[in-house]
Length: 344
Picture 1 (cartoon, rainbow, N blue to C red):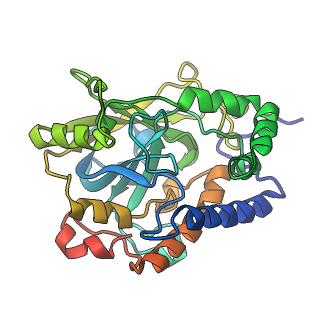
Picture 2 (cartoon, rainbow, N blue to C red):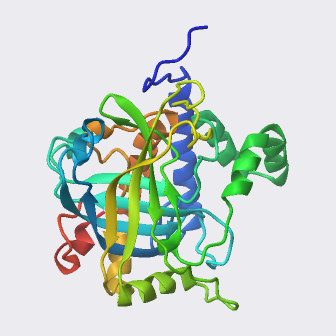
Picture 3 (cartoon, rainbow, N blue to C red):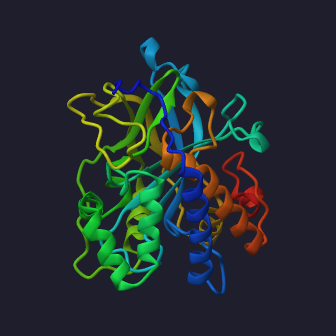
């Protein structure tokens, strides 16, 4: 058998069937979970905060890192949404996965999605664990079916998928402050002609402690307290695929070793001092939509999980916005008063 090639996708022939099933299953799930009120996301429905930031491209990057939005030094305004991946809206003290979704604005160039090719946004999606829970779309669809099924279905699935059990166990953690967590893309992306994964690495001088008797929404309050008096800073870094077999494109549940290929900083994320804990920000963040396919072709998502995201995210986003009677439109600046209710 010939070794796989770097930055090349190998899509299974039955992937589209599982993608369609997954989209339908998740759509049905959000209807079941939100029978009244706002129709929320199927994942990451609980927002800890949406904040204004500057995405600062490093000066003097080597030629191999000068790709797409990183081609030249500069500063992009950005909206960053921090969230809980759990489908519920439970207390923050629960163990779980947290999300960091970055939306750059003023990004020139034609984008991938045909009906949004003239939009000026670029999204990067990251979570608080370095591997995705499942290998591929088929396994993720089966996991979703088990989690929405009977106790027996859950037991049978997890008995047959020990690596999923391990990935879930490693990812379920408690956190003190979303601004002090390291995040990873888990899924790969093109970077010009190469394949990469991304990570956001926080600068933390003195880490917060989890409160002894925490409020249900203490992570939102920890963020708001930090940003009311100062900034938060992350390094945005890239990890190149160095071995197509040990660092696969089509298996998002497999860790890419940082020993084999270390992360390299390409930008600084500076979250500005601000007041972000109010109803206007909560409504704005609820209506925002993030997908890795809001992207320049140079940063095209790779692998089965990302191919499924193209279908699933759009299906869910269109359904939610229609049900919530909110137009779908990308933000163009920091003025919530002007564009908040019209941003998806």
